[in-house]
Image (cartoon, rainbow over the protein chains, first blue to last red):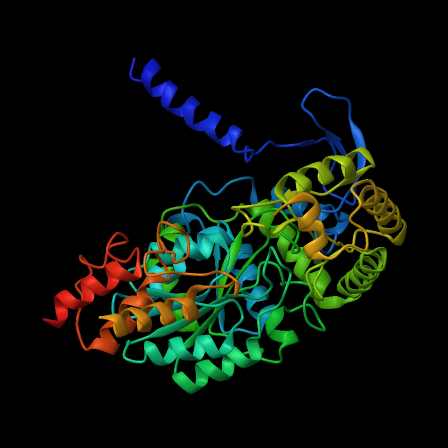
Length: 415
Length: 81
């Protein structure tokens, strides 16, 4: 037996260490479709509980939209279930090309290539377009998938302080001798909910002859007047060289991602990006669903407008109740608790009150920055948010943090 | 040497510290203490190379060699000779 008791004990020991540190992750089983109201089994084996979901990436409420489901059914019926091939052998259908064209138009870029996920897009893009003679300069809070992608690339990597444009400029000067320079950022930062200063970044990239990469996974579909993303909000549509985004969040929430941008860079990905070359692309049923999502979003801004109003309502309610929030305008609204255990206890108490929201702590967020990350959806109606707000206030009173400053919460619970 | 220590320490504080209240000494663990991550180390290496007109081989720019200001100065001095 290759899997000996000694080998098993190594892994059980490591898993026990994770449990002892209090960072062991457990899934909660949802017995309903993804929506504002969900039925959850937690802990495992317990009876189902109806709760309001305040922590999904279903920003536009399209995960279970009837038009999307109908389109997915039609895709399944007309194009089958699987491709059984990578793209360049016999794994490309007309609907894949249709989706790439729709994404290009939606994002205002030159071309687009689909990936099985945005994680794969970020893992593959840098290695495909850069060499050891180049440099990648990333914001220090970019998503983990970007960090993994940079690790796979031979180019030099460096960082700049979060959203610090003076520091970015210093780095562009420091690396002026490199053949190619790419500045890398998230459009909306997933843990803090703040937005990149893309207008200033475009100006710096033009000044120092650098390309700009933006991950729009937490922006596509709802940030900007017509939901095109952070580049629309910042007035720089057409000026971002590489956009990556996901179809696993606002754009239907199933799976899949893409690289969209300058046509030569997209073509380099088609020739060299390993997750594209060595993995099946998005299944026809999902492609059909995303095509329908983009049709819905191209016809009307109703859903992103509702999301904007819901976000205003939610942020105002929490602020007036006396919670400490991270500043921002996006549907990611972090309620700051600072202490890791408090974030877990607060989440449990919310669940008892019928609200599903998860506590995040180190290493997912920096040490001493524990929080409940709430996420607003266009699938929420005001009555959902009112009920969730009542629960937050009740639990906030229980833990005596309402109206308290960061320093007062830390003094009471530790950091 | 003392001047170099102060220059490197000042660079590390300005470049990497997020918390203004945090205090660093010449022997504070930078890499193993989580102050400088491996991705951000490159700017420190390039700063030293530009400032002291030296070239530090990648194989010598290890997390161990960059772990404190004192160790960094020892490494730089090797290439100044």
